[in-house]
Length: 134
Image (tube, rainbow, N blue to C red; front, side, top):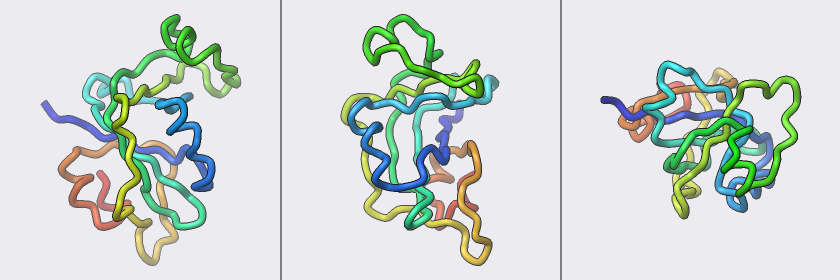
């Protein structure tokens, strides 16, 4: 069985990553139901200033934002109507790291990550730019 990396453009500025470190989760993420069971890793693309995948974590669990245990630990979230049916990705404790060699956007395309991308771990590890994450 393949293990997948889920990547998303969740924040636009590197300074906004504090919630990931403080809370060890990413909220309001749309996930392809066909592979939710295979998502074992999470990568975060930061749009500004450098347009690179900067963070990586192991996934502990993926839960509905209305999950009672999630709400008990993290408090009730205030999802917008656009967040209906979305999930929270909980990271394994201590697994969130900043990549020493972030993965840049695709050269010459202005192309960063738009929305959700899924990749095998081996493709993610070998990626020279975000176009290689597939």
